[in-house]
Image (cartoon, rainbow, N blue to C red; front, side):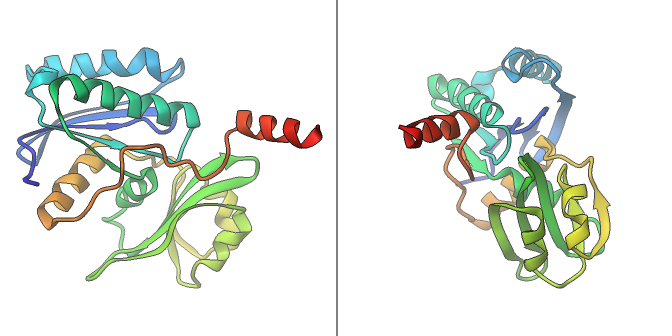
Length: 227
């Protein structure tokens, strides 16, 4: 696969929505918005504005990159459905990465190369993944749903800790740098995609990455067990 001439990067696995357009590996335009209504109402108008800014249309795209979670169950479904809905009529390929890898890459400029990306999964749990960047880079923990104290078992090394779950895990890790406001951005997703395509790396399937059951599934399961 060659570096896309025109790529749309779409990240909407949590409350923020982030979109970016890349041409020949360079980011031309990017938009971030914290969606207070619902993603289905905000996502397409944001994309329309971005396309108008660059004077592109959806038919100009040759690749769409999207994150597949973990995150909000509804947000992940909407993001993936939007990417596929845009891509299918025009025959555009959809490529995906998980949101934790993109979140961790937000801190590549920080001196500590061991990055813990952690999102508040509610119910006193976190979505977490840990990466050690270098030559070669290593995945110390693949995307997982954990109790906060279990994160302390990943490594005894000092960590850069980023994401909405920072406060939940801080008592259990050695942190040299934290950023609880960091979230996966489409600009970072797009840059990773361009780098990975150039390196011949495989992508993840453009299907939801759910690390636990949704509340609705838990209720149905509990109801069945109560019978």
